[in-house]
Length: 167
Ligand code: HEC
Image 1 (cartoon, protein in one colour):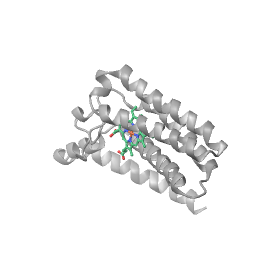
Image 2: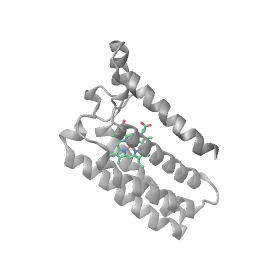
Image 3: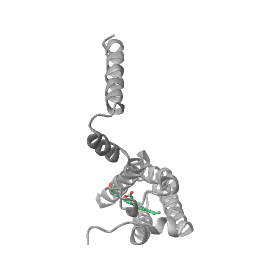
Image 4: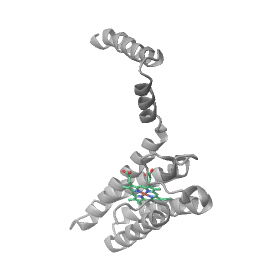
């Protein structure tokens, strides 16, 4: 009930804010707001996708450090990475590199060598699929080796296509 009554109020508030922004007035503030809001949503989407890939990979490594790894969790994490890796090539529309003034680590090389970038994403797709199918077998050494191979594809892509701001 509360939700039903609150919703139109929220909508009205949003509308009014929108109208105020359109009515001109303080142009400098309008311009600043626009600049801040201009980053395409895809930037956030791809960042969140990589963050989740990072978390899933961490979960895999955490399990492999344990005495009795949860191989089902490793398999699930690898499957998650696999799904997310398939989204990577669609997360880089033109005009969203470090050269475009956005807060991003996506180097222009992604658009200069699109085939190479796609191949780098495909490597992660392939290696995470292998990890997902290997993990349920429970052979720790083999799973660890495959996790390493998958990790190599992260580094392979980052070295060429991601801004290294940690150096
Ligand atoms: C095909 C290339 C590619 C592959 C493969 C790849 N990455 Fe990335 N990764 C990138 C790029 C490009 C960025 C920077 C994205 C941006 O700033 O918009 C990034 C950013 C990240 C980030 C930072 C996200 C943030 O908060 O901004 C993490 C964490 C990450 N990757 C982890 C991984 C892990 C772990 C793997 C392997 C399991 C992996 N990546 C595989 C290209 C790749």
